[in-house]
Length: 536
Image (tube, rainbow, N blue to C red; front, side, top):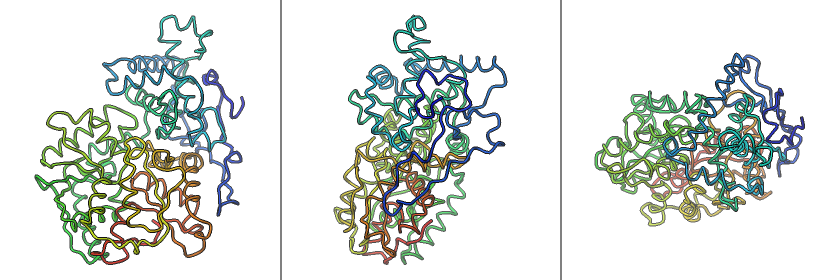
């Protein structure tokens, strides 16, 4: 079978592998990486691959167990088809039925979406990574196996496809080769949202067949609901971490700040992505410094789930999503705060605000706001004073997909950077036309097997090219430190891993961090040097 040009109708063929990524077909990197040679993606180790279907492309991030018999395969195919039927009913898909059906019915196969997709582009044009490829698999299944008379008319309507175990297993894997960045939806002349379709396929597999990446489900949502946080940080451990952070604030700035917890009636309940607690405590410290020096009435919650804004159900499962966001709403209502502010986390913005509008109803409909808007008010209205010369180094901005493209929060962060960073420059393209960091839809936390290699080489590669092109050649001279501002925890995780993969701190002087760190770095009431030029 052709390595790149597989057709939709061929997805059900009994082959060992549909597609193999060839690193020689990847686009070249710009200066100073013209001579960079990418290693081949390693195969999954035998002990990890045993009993799992890897026949799509040999990449493992969602475990699809191989049934032990043909009868069991047929049972699972039938279960899958029943899940498809549920996707088409308002009783079972009250969240997204209308946009899902519009996207399923209106594609004219112009392939405009493909040109917008970083995965397809960076693969060198592999058919299976076209945004409409996985959508068309599902579309043909619906037309042939669910629509009246579908099997009779399939050969004449372009809906011919074999619904067997191979098709089902590969479709599950295809749903996790998409960042859900929805750049394709933005460019589609018909308004088709292939990102939504990919997400609905994920939902089908999770809710009907129990198939979802462990990092999202078992080690994500379930851990969050049972321990309090997706990182496993319990309420008791949380207090220990904040004791350390308060001491660190004093060491770094000379300020003595006590972080407020469970303060009833505060103006703001701030909720962070718990990944910050362990990986980037300086981000949480920066929020505390800004809010305290600005005289903001604010609080954090110490209640289970209330201190972790993560909601991975957004990426794969409506039921799991609802459990988490209802807990967030409950905590906010109990504290009686005037509004909830989301910290620097893209998917948490969307989970609590855009999609949360369907869940936070009645008395739970507490106002919610992006921290970027909150920070804009504090900086631009001079509720904190800044000296931009302290940030006199090259800075570029990464736009988190869920904040910018999905929610339209575009200018607040830019107004701040224009004020506090004299050497700020945009990536190309930027704003709502940005490219995903490559870690969206949960990819950033999927660190096992050979999947990280895939996300560095395809979706991450496009972002790395953007980052490199944002700076001038002379700024790559030794000793010129450059800052990639990424106001999103998951984006920071992906960009950290990207820079490490490409050795970009040593080779190109590239560091990354959030927006609040830059604000504190130039606050006149804070000791100089909050941003520490160390890669971690």
